[in-house]
Length: 431
Ligand code: FE2
Picture (cartoon, rainbow, N blue to C red):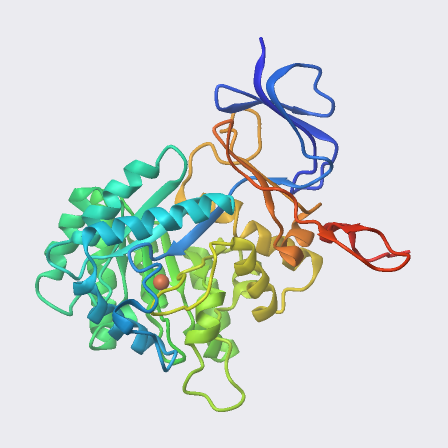
């Protein structure tokens, strides 16, 4: 039987080279060298990296692309000003504009090979406009992008009496995970109470949890301790994520080591957001200025599932970004001192297979029987991909090419030198 697609001569993230990938009915049916079969379409990967799609474990699709709206930009660069601006901006955002921005970001994501996003959606507004729109967007993009939504009380679960009801209504609308922001509650005790209440909802309804947790430079912010405890107590292991976890950066090593042990034992996943937190944290420091990213290598070494998220693109918190998860991984390599080959490969996994596991994505990965979802990069391996943040030559979803781009090649005019340059062709000569 004719195949739908064959990708030839691929390098896979685990280092296997000269591999062909055969696709039928939206799934990989054979993965081996030199497959002798015909297909409706063949693509020569030409020794380049074919990776499972990128996955963003932490994003805010309701706020994205709002930078400069109503003339507002974050002047201090602080998290607090970002939250205040967002609260001021929300009334200016119509359902149509929110939908248009969310869809535009999803287009950009697809072009970057980013085919799954966990997005928090603010449920502070009693009309739940953001949740309603994003549930519709989720359905609309489902053929090409997996969008997982988290009900997120941005101003705090105890900020106003209607929030508990808003959160439950958002879950009824089709938002599928429970969020929270315990460090922003009025007191540390109310923060802990919010964790208990929100984890109880998740346990009762069989849902995932992902809380913004300890996104502060204050080493005394220890809400993740309670999140780990509730995860164990309620049997939610493997279903709960602590996002940001910036205070871990500033804690003393003794307490941090103990806490990381508890988190690993609880089966709590962690998401660091290096781009956003490198600029939002440390704003009250003079010099040295803290980096703000949580302890990624230490969490990984302890056995926690650690993913890297983009968090924000062109919004009140982060004025840059282009849906490029390799840019996120690149920053994590720097902020976390993860420049060993193993460290860089771990950061690549943290924007692909690890977040896929955290989100519970079905059929993810380049294996026979899984969905034929993958990306051909203009790079030869995961480390080179992080270094170059290269062109996504082809993005494949369920066996269909949904985005393509020409390779980046410069034309040179240099005496006695080659006429063209592929950036991936310049590499260390380790002999
Ligand atoms: Fe966030």
